[in-house]
Image (cartoon, rainbow, N blue to C red; front, side, top):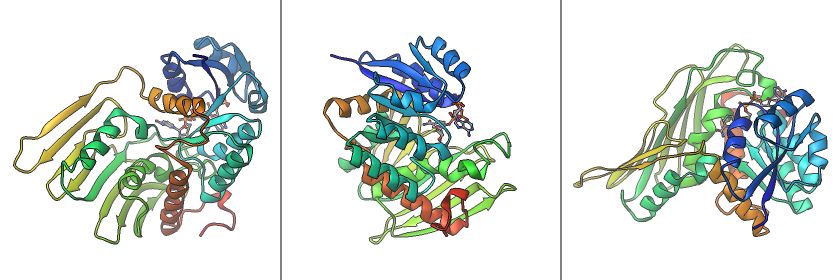
Length: 332
Ligand SMILES: NC(=O)c1ccc[n+]([C@@H]2O[C@H](COP(=O)([O-])OP(=O)(O)OC[C@H]3O[C@@H](n4cnc5c(N)ncnc54)[C@H](OP(=O)(O)O)[C@@H]3O)[C@@H](O)[C@H]2O)c1
């Protein structure tokens, strides 16, 4: 089988983890890296034996010997960097959130469609074995009728008003960085909410440092979600049903996975999902399967899902009064 040739844009923290995981996949080849600095690109390339290093993102986007590019820049770069690659006919796996707002995501999806190239948001949790297991347990009615979700994700971030977590220009705040995971889980299981109630503590830079979000659905479903950049929280997820519940143990969004099924009248069953990679190999494998099958989007995380997700994130931000410079006049 011919290898799928990967490039990486933005050789920062997450790019290292993805590079390590790509090296574990037999049918993947990490061919090039693009940085804003040639020295940084060369440095990264040397660590992973990557043959080509570029000191301009535009150069790697133009490079012919690549099938797909992983965009690992901060949130505010996702839209422009993705569109640049799509216009050069390169498939794109773009880190979450796909962009800062719906307006940017719509532009990206239009470009992927117009250029007939693959695009997927890198929500790695979707492709972890523990997620498949949970979906299977729910489909098999293991906890009865599912009514509610309680999920959180929090850590105590080092405060840097100019860094990507707190800087409004970079799409800072808890919601887009980590709150996106509980929101993702809820959309995966329940779809878009009919009603949203959200509140946040906005910090000195104006971004949300802690969010409390309630979703409700016609028909009686609910989700209670919490994200924090200032507290270390349990980072667990619970899915409650009429006959029991599923607990996805901390940290629920990442491997190794541990999932307990509690069904009334039965002994709880815990399943472990050990992991040898960083956990990014699964989403990369999905990208490659899609490319080999000539697909523009993944069935498991399609464009419509990413559009719903950013629409919900926008709606939450509207309630928080959280406006980014990129929103212009299009947001609250
Ligand atoms: N899926 C996950 O588990 C996960 C985990 C962490 C982060 N992420 C996502 O990955 C993205 C990157 O996060 P990260 O923590 O890896 O970020 P990071 O290390 O702070 O930055 C990544 C790279 O982006 C490039 N970059 C481009 N414009 C930049 C700017 N204006 N300021 C700073 N760097 C800039 C830099 O590389 P060059 O200058 O060398 O080009 C930098 O090394 C975020 O969108 C985040 O949501 C995902």
